[in-house]
Length: 391
Image (cartoon, rainbow, N blue to C red; front, side, top):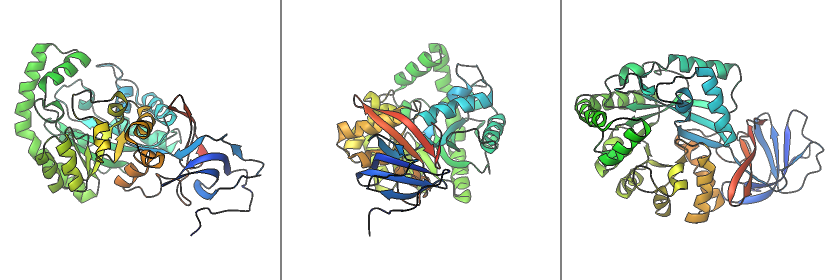
């Protein structure tokens, strides 16, 4: 089978020809030309083109549009300061512009439900947020394609009530099970939790100590019933289910028994190894990769990458970190460029059941990012979503 598929017909004005690019395909980088037609990749050609309407990419890299399965960035725009709620549509549009500028063409907006703090972001009714997302999508206001990742805080008393807003929503594409009770998982080291809550949220030591006791009581009462509810819901509705901050092999085994297919941010090597043995897709934070370690004191993403225990990177709280981390895999973990970029495109797409995007191949969606590497850092110069330039 020939690698390249050629076309002799000139592209009509409504289509696009991207020429003189270093095209990052699934297993190699080739210099050539892409023809985009009706939102798809129509042809890939290793030869130069004489098409008069071709856009010369000047030898820049052309990579698949990034697929982000877990970002808190929308929440940050909705509540830019503690207790400061921003209007939903401007928050969404600002978030959308930021992720698109980072090369993300498909984003699963991570919205948390469940919080003992009544004024916290994750205790809010999300109906206005969903209404803004629906309107912006229908009106064609968004650069990236937005879907929903609902993060469910299992020990919180109000989790099921708040999740009801998302139930049966057509954009719901991922559910993750979280338990941030200090003393286990991400906050196994309680002093690290103290630094986070007292530093970021401005809590006093007294409030933190009180919260730890309250959280532990809520965990005993709610965590397991809520876990069973979401496991059954995800199985019934065929929504991918993710675990969060697996620390012990027992955490992974429990998740596997309940249908978990994605292990987000395992905190120890042994948990990541157990996830690999169970066939789960392993996700680590791109900021962890860029910074060289976890802000919570857990396992470094780079360590898992070097051990072959990393499938997908998530920008988590910094959209621009996604590409930066992928290039760090090349420089520091000896990944090939196609392998590294798969962690932010094909791998998350396949983990979420998206077969029409995630790599550059004939017939797939024309979700593309033009990149120039400057002093070792990737700089996004243009972004196309379904063949339409959005950046």
